[in-house]
Length: 152
Image (cartoon, rainbow, N blue to C red; front, side, top):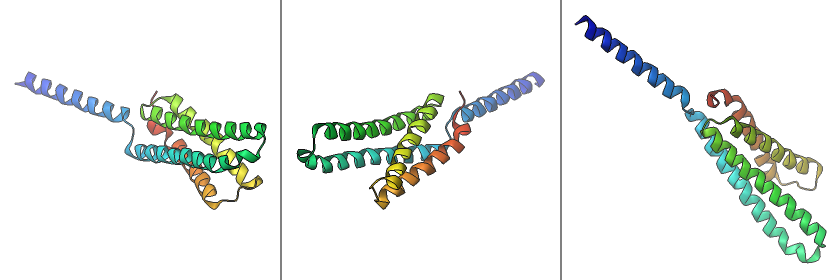
């Protein structure tokens, strides 16, 4: 009888350890929410860049070839940055540290371009500033929740 009780206690202890291991390997719900919102935000940026590019493409018939190449390169680069941000967040869901690096680096570069163009350029759209400030908030949120996500 005593042996059965010790076996039962060992079994219960192992189950508790397995549950705690599963919990430590899972991404927290708060980070999942931040990640999903970040993916939605990056997708909105991609749509915004595509819409902006299609709007200015009407004026390409008046521009020279080098200007068209420059605008195409910059818009393509900004779209690629947002795609890499989405890849980074999806890697962070899998608890990969490379995902954190990809997301933070490309989000900082993208947000820096936007804030620079807002404050030093001719772009004075308040919606763009709001999106850029939301990106700064997500940089802060992801950085502060990094320890909850990164186990590897």
